[in-house]
Every structure is written in C-alpha cells, then in structure tokens.
Image (cartoon, rainbow, N blue to C red; front, side, top):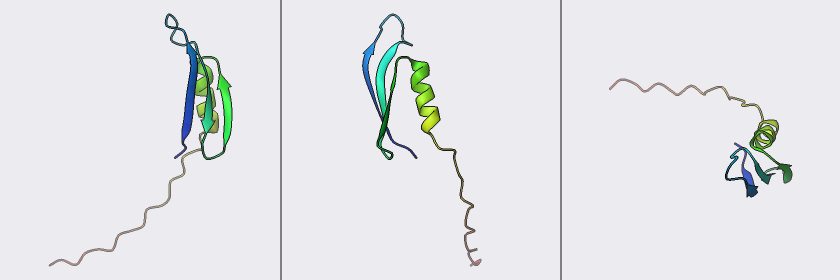
Length: 65
C-alpha cells in the first residue's frame, strides 16, 4: 500500500474540478503538482504500483475431534 500526502492550496467553489496542489509520495520522497482533478488522478494513477498478489499458504487441516 502506498501512502500519499495531498496538499490543496486553492480551489474554485464554482468549479469543483479546479483545484491546485501537490501530491507527496511518502515512501519515495517525491512530489508532483496538479492544477485540476484530472491532474491529481493522473499523478495517483502513475505512481501506484500494480497490485501483486502473493499465493496463499495452505493452512494445515485440523483433525476431526
């Protein structure tokens, strides 16, 4: 799981898609700026790693009592 800090500095009350801020990726120590909701989404989608699932370990079977 990734952790982000999203800082919004300005937003337009009449146009909710217009926001200005930065996204900081905690684990990587990087940051990127955005000027609208689409830019915010693009940043989050670009830095998110693909989900990798580990194979489940089989649990030992309990003997019947």
